[in-house]
Length: 103
Image (cartoon, rainbow, N blue to C red; front, side):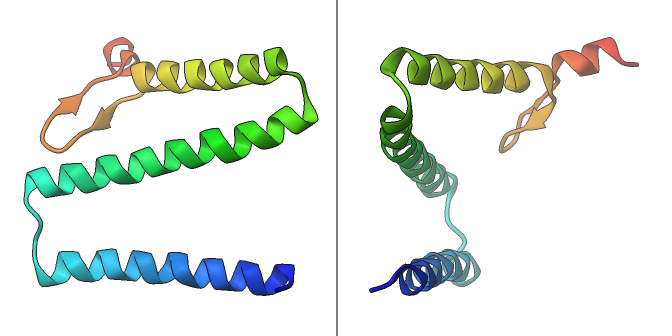
C-alpha cells in the first residue's frame, strides 16, 4: 500500500474504535470500576505509543542523553502543570496552586 492508503485505513480504524466506545456507553452505562479500567488502559496505550514510537524516532535523530533530557523535561513540565492548574477527577475537585493565589 502507499502512504495515503495507510493513513486513510488507520484513520478509519481509529474512528470506528471511537464510535464503538461511544456506542458501548449508550447501550450500557459502565460502572466506575470498568470505566476506570478502560481509562487506565487507554492511558497506558498512549504512554506506550509515545514512548516506543517517539523515543525510537528521536534516537535516530539525536543521542541518548539529548533524548532522555527532552523526555524528562517534558515529564517535568506536565507534572508542574498538573500541580499548578485546577482540574477535576471523577468525584474529587482539586484546586491548583493558581486557585490558591488568585481570589
